[in-house]
Length: 434
Image (tube, rainbow, N blue to C red):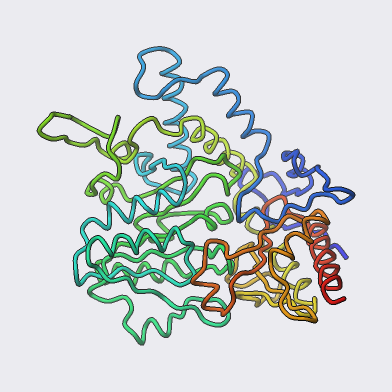
């Protein structure tokens, strides 16, 4: 039975949160799958796009397109103004001190690789880098490569059975110590939904002189973001998970830190002077934006930030918490279904230390039902989820499983869609139990 989720929180713009009105901004949500309405529960994978973002992208291509910072004509000036305006817009969105702290990349993976290459260039044997078992591969593999190049040692937080970083074990093993040079942790787990204590870990890292990096791919789209409050030195996130286009990501960094780092890629616009005997490099952010950048994608991401801010990130977070709490209660009533990660609810029925992604396994009469089978069965009944390891193999191995099914929610998710998910899972279990 559906419940109306109507958070009392209002947006910063004073507009009450109205999920049905919001859904009207996303025409794709009106689609059907056969006889079923589409229930899009895969926003942790990629979010849908509102009309305003698509129209902004179309308008730029049709009326303002040119290369940026390279043309002495009207279109070039308009394109550059829009591109740099988007940079300033994203700076405000995360509470950056200045627009020059925003570096545009093609996605969060590239942003994290930039960190591993540029920050990691100073690593040497005896140094240590700390990550966690719950990281996306994009926050594991770049650091493995950096340690292989430099001779540094990679260490990591383990996870507790309920899906949290094992802080007690970390303390017992002196995980963050005087040899630690870099700590890189997901703000919100893309599998478990766990909201990690980034500020606490950042304080520990800074106490030993280490640089603190956060993967904000799941956090920035869901939560009000202040880089100052997070306490990190660098923050990576991506556009396509926050109602923006694909092909655009962001690395925020403290300006003094960015100014001290070597470039990641070489090419046009990232230089100051080029001679055959050597080159000098532009100041941030252009030092890290070699070649023609994702111009229109950046403009679209600026429009996405405008859209989210108009609704209000506090209101979006409140809605998502209400939806996630409802989903946790309903899903755990399904026989054989096990939720991975924190399942606790507060007195208001809201999840504790968790974002809007719920991964689970489903046990049938004859054994585990493979997440790919679950996903296909759900898709046939209009429910879009993700089945697999979600680019987090080490985390699944820690739980002794190969994969899981993940349902993930966003500002446009309704309790009716959660009911559709529960009904489809109930049907799936009955089908495989025959």
